[in-house]
Image 1: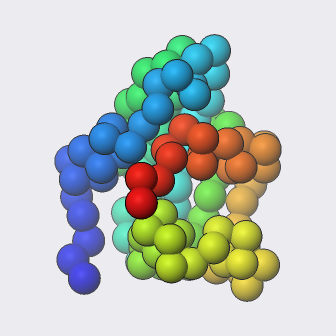
Image 2: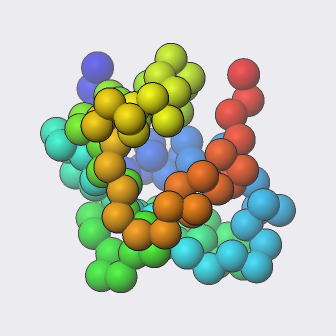
Image 3: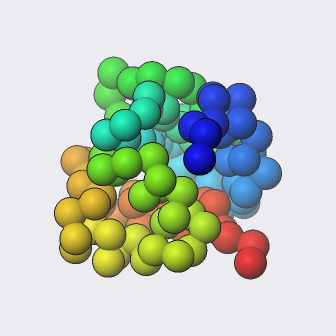
Length: 109
């Protein structure tokens, strides 16, 4: 499966983003992958910015063993908690923010 570029990531995240769920929130999510370039999200007062690379001071960093793991968690075949328990996802920072991702980017199945 080809790796999406930053523009494809931006497009997908913007289409899934719920600005109402982000009201009053100021946070930086850093995403790292074992086999692909990472990116970070800046969420401030209901807005979303997506940038390639690392942020100097993320609120939380989510480290996936592979990009495909992240895709499968988002698409639904893999449960995020199971992936975390299997060591396929690790985190550093405010873990409550990881749980909030489902509200910020609700899946529309």
